[in-house]
Length: 107
Image 1 (cartoon, one colour):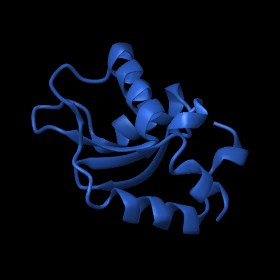
Image 2 (cartoon, helix red, strand yellow):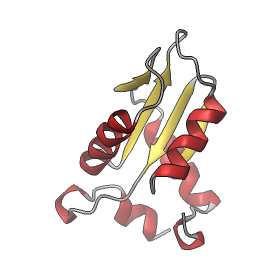
Image 3 (cartoon, rainbow, N blue to C red):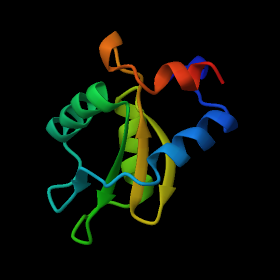
């Protein structure tokens, strides 16, 4: 990931506040982290830009391993981790789906 894409503190605070009331639509279970799961995650972020994911109790990976896997293999940024929940952000490539990113970029 390039340094140009890193979020500043104010931007992260906005994204955390925006994600507070969201429910995690994705989870990491006993199947672990796969390329197919990562592609589904990227597709969901293309439509929403900001989502939460949950690590189930049966997951054989840690929060740190999940965060590293996501950041190393995609341009998705992990905004926050709380317990077994991660808040993820990625700017949509389709302008119609860019609802949050213009606000974040203007900060």
